[in-house]
Image (cartoon, rainbow, N blue to C red; front, side, top):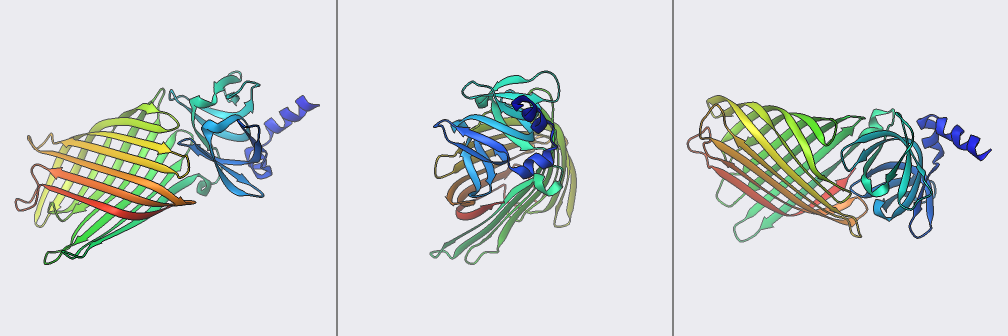
Length: 339
């Protein structure tokens, strides 16, 4: 009878099992928590419960899992499975019932992300918004920045919409501003490979740039993908159109991106992100651009973070001859809310 009951639960639609909150997480200390798995990434499992709300559990502290919600299961080697997780009878090992082939044993440490395969679009959205402010009285320097991100994850596709802006005002000088908006699409390929395409718009008054529109495409690969860190590179080509005062120019460029993220989920939650872009021009020989963005976040209470960020931009040959070649800024204090 127990076997029949387990098979019956296994065949239930994902929407029904999710609403029953019958996912169970067994901790290494012997405790167990029942609820609905919302997400697991960066070593943090979100579990919705009836009595205690949504709990955040460190994945490396789990001993086994009984997850009947249909999941997108990403492994450390880049392989993706679709199915459910059941206890295997071994510590820190799950039995994965997936779409193709027989059930297989997978160490929990090899699982780096779990995404429920929900039917509704809104349930697949995730993101954050943040705002920062700094002021120096000695030279009347004031700086305001805004940063936001919204992402959507499906079985093999990933969409991201992001926007950031920073405005700086200093005594007896004009206010300078930098804005950047991106639409990014990635598709997972076998192994740790992925394809990527991006459309972006950017302005930077310090570099004399009124508007630059970019369309880029390429491939990338994860170098490191664990529960606490992610390092990947991508490379490709991009075309853009630049406008500076009355000047206009079309460019063909190559682009290489290196991005690293580090996550520490012991209380409090801390994360560090670093991205570096190298962009040599193919149509304007000798021109070289690069961008560096970095941020450090520290959780002060649930879903709210204080944030430190810095960026640096360089253009060896700006479109306007009177424009500066480099621009940088540091935001000493920002506040971020995770959606």
